[in-house]
Length: 512
Ligand code: MSP
Image 1 (cartoon, rainbow, N blue to C red):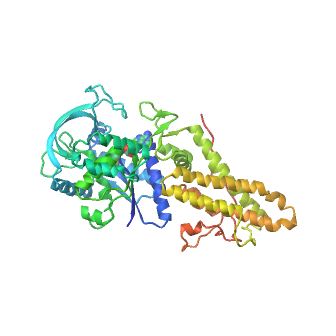
Image 2: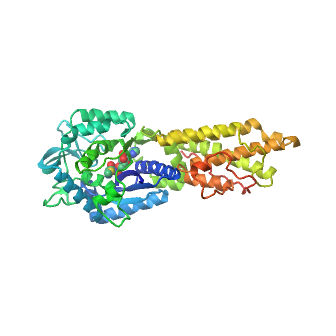
Image 3: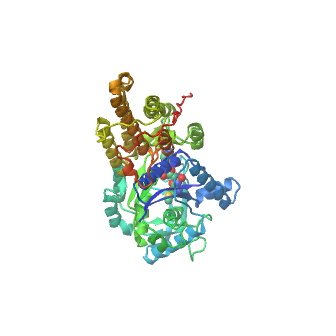
């Protein structure tokens, strides 16, 4: 069975922002890691195209909603290609195939007697596409996330009997692996303990949505529709499109990676909906934190939105990936600071890793006929091989538990230790004595070998940089060898020709 990982399905009210890039990069790294570990992976991403928010955005742009969605959806796809995101399925909720899944699902939920007609009254945030609890009944009350006025709604809607699933949901969320990180799990547990209320799943004032079968004027509530995008995505590229085909095709998802603002939908509403339809629930919902810029919330009105495409053209993919993965602990909020960004990239990637490779490869080329030295210590036991072994073990444990920042730090640690080893051994002094030549060969081999392992560990996080390091080591892997086998010490082939070194990453300048 395939390991299924999903990003949220992004609203197409605008092009991707740093938050969407963040989630997508994290999912991409996890997907790449799992593939390297030999697992079959289905990495799902896509767009959430219906609802009042999109309907209004299209109207403001004088566009038919479908045309607007086609435009923005293409921008998302292009962005993901530019960032080299290794997704397998890109789902669009305005597709006919998705519409079919929503209707089939709705019939199952209806069959469980979980749908009824009622009246929905309350204050609604169009930005969140969500009713807000008890906001003092004031029309001037603003959504804390979007800072926009809430809108009063009073209409006949279909309701989903969420309250029926109180006990099941309590059991699901108390499972320690289901919601991560722990602090967010506690927030959800507290919320559920106050009692679950049924929620409305149709709208009569929204035309841009999937029509509810056999009910004139009602379209599905955008969240009821969008969450099912994960299920329809499973069928993309397959011959059959039905709920059963998704179930046969590997549902449930292993991880939904999402931001903290939409955790309730994924950790409460979604499992209850799936239970009602007799389907399996996802194995894990990981709620990451929010990114700010120089300590401030990003927003159009503040004029401080960081355009990911600008970052990409200015710095390239890997520096941005490194900063977002290494500097922010997954689950916590994070801050993007220009100066810190430049310092981290220069320090970690250009100096610690890049220089290590550059100077060692130069020494090796100079002293050993442009090649990796041959040496005689065939046991490969040395202080650096032990450090590399520990780094690999820690890294794997950290990746498996989604501590990607720690995994990145394990790589950096190994690079720092390798630099220390090199500085401590001082081969540039030893080489002056003929009797020390064997020792120098061993030292240089060890450092190059450690660098090879650093490149392999970087593979899921910084795919481009990792291949650049590999190319500089002139290393060609045996295709039958798994990534984990390649990670064993001693796989750098002695006597391999080393190409002329060039910087793997350019130093960045801080512009104020
Ligand atoms: N369409 C819904 C998701 C439906 S999933 C079936 C949605 N879309 S969104 O485009 O508004 O948000 C997508 C993701 O971006 C969310 O996970 C949200 O948490 C995340 N982010 C939005 N702003 C963010 C930051 N400033 N920082 C990090 N992530 C943030 O919600």
